Length: 430
Image (cartoon, rainbow, N blue to C red):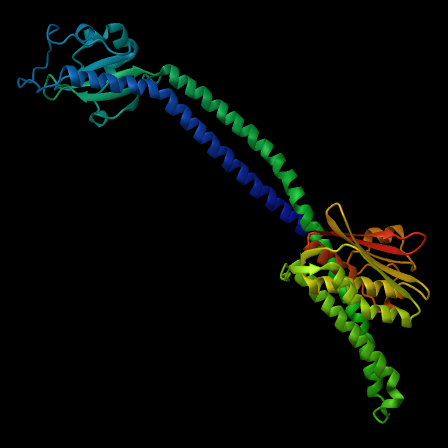
């Protein structure tokens, strides 16, 4: 499976995951809003039913009659006069012991026939429970059945018309469905956009990883090939003395040392990428640390007829890892010594500006191109590969330097040093 197929497959997975997440969120949001709307709409009818139930229990409380009479006289039980309902929307239906409606006259023939109450059957499961009731497939009621306190085995079923609430709820449900469909379509677009943005770092990491492996393989292959060739040559001359094969041995040792440095740098960068390497920060006097570590380099520079000067004026103490800062300065000074010629100078200066500590390593060496300034911190990048190999460079030093600076929450950049040479400028938080 090539890179493009892997990326497309991963992008499709991200689109699917995002779409599922958006759909679930919109569905949950719609369900919550619909549920709240339904509860709000039916709250008033339910309160009316509960209030009517309380009135029945308070005004007609007591033991039911023992005769179990199925008929009620208008003098003893007049709903319209004795107990006016709290809401005119409520229709009280009286069920006698035979399960028949006993107050058709009080209901009114118009309501009785229009609502289809002649088809209404007594349902014991609705006693004491507010439930929904639909008549003729058109009329919607909320209903509550309570025991009749005046007659034995008789009940009063309260009906409240909720057609308006039901229509509002139906319209709201359609709006929710339409909005959900629109949001799902929008979420598809959003999923595609988000997947592309999410996959970009993966692609960059993929490309960097491939480039890193290719460059590392190339850099490791060269010294290994040289060592192998020299050892095979020595194997063909078993009778030779060491003095006769000194050059081959020396070259093999040189390549071995270069290989060791390279593997160390690769391991450092690998640990940096995995955030395995932890800094051991402590108070560090920047000027003192740089002065101490530069002393041997001043002597090395003098042997090569070069000059190193110091201008340490920061007088700052910062929280940093002294071992990593020492490694940083070693990398910068090694590079400066490699790419300067006789009579060139190398300068190290420190100062405070904008409440930050600045460290500058400048030289008057061969300099670097504009493209090189942009890529100098890339891994394995070398301005002149042939000359870098002669100097023993692998193109990893400044990448490690950049990681050290970033680990200390600082910045590092390469600049032209006029009239010639390079300046490496480092900013560290004070």
